[in-house]
Image (cartoon, protein in one colour):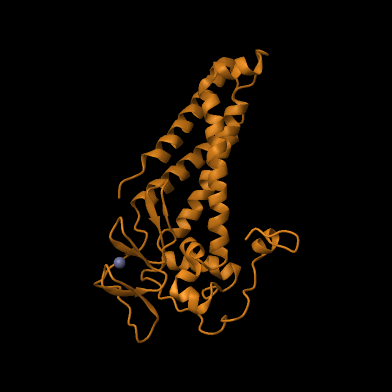
Length: 266
Ligand SMILES: [Zn+2]
């Protein structure tokens, strides 16, 4: 799979600008500011880029018609007309790759990769590092540019055009990634994928069993994501028959905060 150049270039650009500002500050004022913070920033850059590189290369959970077909007598399955196979529930055929991905979550356009059963938890961890990365990039650049010369603010930033670029980029990416992070975490805690969340009743098993048919509670849902990513075989999902049918779904704490008697976000 081709790596998407866009996030690589943005991340590297920010890293170069932040280091440049830091080094320029050291040379100009002979002062090494926020050393522990800068060391932490280096760690964050390393973690963020290595997770991104891993996600670009890693298998999101491609199913093989030769080995991953599921017996329809024993388990409910999803038939893929393109692969001509019965695969575990929650999988989806990705047309651009012409393959089925187990527990398909979403197609990440920033990374140009699929997020599925074998890389979903890594993706959430990646988002945490990226949030730190963009937050610290903006923060260090702002504090590496103290207006010691007492210039007019506009003149000061005009003189430091590289910093002027970094701060809005950091802010922009921080906001976008924060929204994505909250959405990823909320679907993960609710025991659904982003794909299931967006398709809802259009998926036959959600229609038949309800959108909480894989919901085992906040913490078990998150533990499941880690467990299925680490296990060798693919998970064969079985929705809870009847148990939740017709019963109004118990809403998560997150939904209860966003949706109450005064205000509804849904
Ligand atoms: Zn398929």
